[in-house]
Image (cartoon, rainbow, N blue to C red; front, side, top):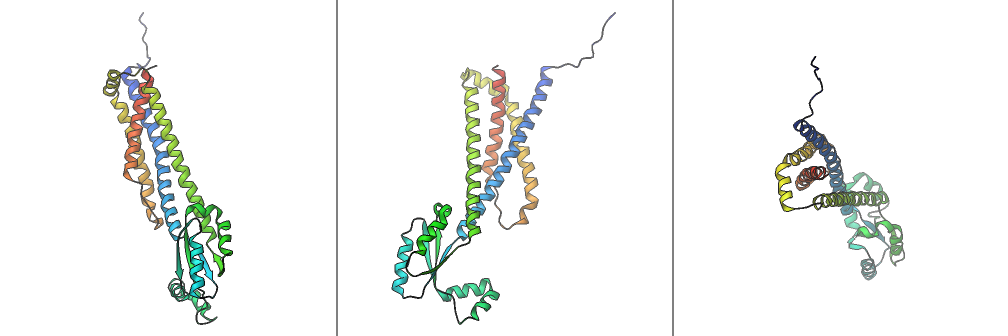
Length: 264
């Protein structure tokens, strides 16, 4: 009596097809995380640049002559972290306020023809942002200073976005370092030029599977982000080079993983 087996065949070709799908999905998952961080990093850097360009420390001056004003300017310029110090006369300040907030200036003018003082607007480096309170105390101690003002919440925002920018950059760097070490560990194990060329010819589909998964992740992220780009006038797109680099890296790592599997 003849027995019939219903076990499904597990041919090498079927295993390879399954492996291609697994690599595609792994590359897609990793690339989605990379693309999400890339979009966040680009937006954080754009907003940080705008905040730094807008942030100013305003020094209101006591009534005095030009000599006292110039001496104060020299003292301010000598401080560490000062990028520029621009004198704003009371008339210029009044004209600005009329353009920016005409309702507010109506109340101010009830106190006199022009109650606004002369002032200096100081642009500072990011190096002093973490100790801005201590830094402004140095200005308070200068002769001729009536008041020192700045937007505290804007200063906090600059510090936070600076941290986000540096943190994501460091995360990218560590991930790249891990990928490089993994690739070197695999490729230098029993390395030979002939074996490398044979692996490139034999396993190029694994590269295409990994690169395809990453390319699908790029497309998916753009489909998510593109419809909401008009929510804010502050918007920046990542450099296309980084998308291409991510796709090629995913393909290379997929191919490298197969070389590691074949060497075992």
